[in-house]
Image (cartoon, rainbow, N blue to C red):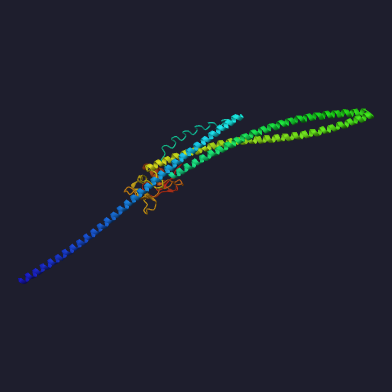
Length: 421
């Protein structure tokens, strides 16, 4: 009995020892697992803190960049305003100078009694372009071009207007000179015509004298035939004298005829010059008219450029348009959420466009696609049409239209070209 009891006690002790070992091993395993979990939690916390720090740094950078852009846009606006003010002042000065020159010209014309073509273009274009562009571009869609390009166009248009005004002033001076030259030439032609008329009268008188001398010679010859002796000699001497006077009269008449021809030739030349100068005068008036038209066109271009610049400024303030070709958050969020990351996400973050971190849009974003020059529509254009009419309007079933888009459920992949509107 005692032996069996001892054996049972030993077995119980061995079972207790095995249980204790197993429990100790389990505890060790539980402790190791808990330590691993704690380490993982620490790593996750460190990662979360790093991501939050990077996100905060990105937000700070984006805010700083946004401030810099806002300051740049303000500086550009100030420059534009200063430029427009300076251009307006210059235009006023030019107008004042033109007004003074016109007054001086009118005063001179009154003095010289040259008011025939006075005020030919007076008030011809007065109010022609007044209110021409009033509300013309109202209700158009968002403008895609940048502020800087519109500002450059406005500057160029204003420079062109100033140059056109200077050209108008120069051409007016040339026109006045041509007028004076033409009048001088007409006066010279009149004087030459009077001289030619006088020479013609003198030539006629010389002709009458030669005719009389011939008649006297004929009479003397008849008398010489009749008379004899000393009377015949005297008659022959008188005939010789009259012949000499006749030759002298013929020489004088030939000289007068040659002078008359030279005077008529000079008069013709002067008349031709006067006609040329009148033609030059008409050309000068036409060039002045053309220069005025060019100046008005340049003014209208400057007016259009100003309007477009104002529109773009408004859109930039509202956040609808960006100045560097990057899309706004509103543009990105306008696309469906299923295709938003496909269309806009820049995985390597090297596209040069960033947005504030949000779950509604990617932070690194691609630039907006430029308008295609081959007539093919963009994905944004296709998605702008309602979904019920999208496939009817844009789908190309045979895929032979020459336009393809990335495959997506929101638009057809083979697309028709944009038709003329």
